[in-house]
Image (cartoon, rainbow over all chains, first blue to last red; front, side, top):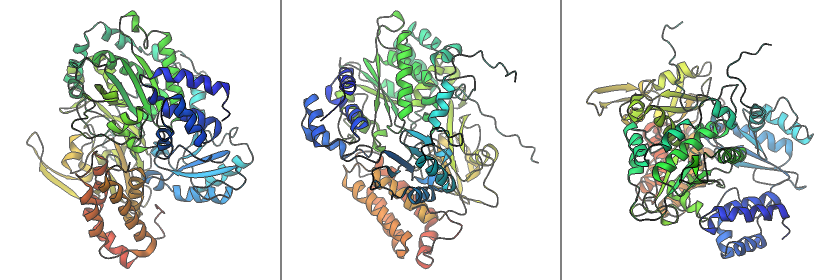
Length: 189
Length: 451
């Protein structure tokens, strides 16, 4: 298994944070999955060795938790919230629009490995549904029409710079560039 | 034009979150007087803080509504084992999105609340268990903890005292069951999150690593800071007796202005929330049903009436819109305020499809440990899916009810109830729709696909 030096350093820094080594399992899995895209048997054995466990102790986590993977998703992974509040706002149509535009069915990876779509259970942003995540970015109020537009921007590689689709996370980053500005001074513009 | 004034929010927890001049940086938090309550608390004895929290009457904001001060009192301090504090930031009850706001927009409020709580219970270490879908949320918390450590508000020798408490952010991996506190503890131990049976595994006695552990919700821990600010007695005056403080209500579904709104407990009714605060229903639609406290809570039919005697002895006779938004109001109406997630459904909703959607959630999220829940949730999903696929049978309503009744009370954790209550209440209140599915299997043109 080829893990970067950086990930190994992060893993080594992580383990002593916990009173018992085994507690670090989930966070180590996240770090390795972030780099390799999935956790195969070799990775299970490596983590188990690191934490003085049996490989089954790691594999049973991979097979339980919905976000842990034995095989990678596509290069761009799209998560669509399926649960009731988003469904009441049309998330099934959103998912179908994405499937059509990106040429891949929900729960699958496109043959060329570029895109995958997954229905998720409640993404905890129910007031702004339908909610769609592209990798780690959350997009809100993505109805079926917007889903088509989002997919177009995604395939042309311009989603991240789009002014129409600003992710929840990006809006926050713009916000947190703001250090303690003097309070409630009205803008002079 | 109505003369009735719209109830006004009272923002305590979300006071700064949406201020355009405020960010999640520590500089903003300090400008607003942040960490002053930590300093104040460290001049007190730990048990004095616990006493204030108990006096405040603050009830847990995660769903069960158990008094937080009481939970702290149950802590086993005699065993000599280390004590742990865990913040449950696994926010995953469908319809709930309040903790998201705190974590992303005002993380230091949570850290301050946690460090006061950690000192009060004399925790050796504290954890924030955050759902993995909050990628940025976890990063925000980690950098906020680094900022707090650099200023001595967290970590080694807090505020120069002898008290140290490290705070670690731990990410879940997409499993709803990790919001159940003993499941969460198993997950944090690096295992599958199969909940533990109570007794004997009450976290306050046998929690993380079999040590005494307190697990509190994000909003509950933020409240600790505000209790220290005004004192338990003053805090108890906010809201109503037994329903103290504010609550962040999350409204989703078919209203004009869905969103999160913080009000004093009992300051408004369900009707005022839907029609005044959230702008009412979409044009031409009428109210069909409300799920008042996250998808696990029992559904309310728009034309239902509720009557009886309240705890204080007064008689009540309410329609859905009269239910006061606090802990006890929804309880009196036979449901619960749960996590505060209000899901509104208008007359276009096919109730059998809504049921199928909810059942698909619980079938997906059952941990599989207890047979009634693992098998029952699966069969409820299959039956409602079949009904929506054109194969509804006359006996389905009774069959669903029988499956749900065989789950309730027969599982290790409350997930069994969470999975059974929606089905029981949908059948009790919308049986006609389940029976109608046999004669009219097609989805109406006006109804959205929900499964």
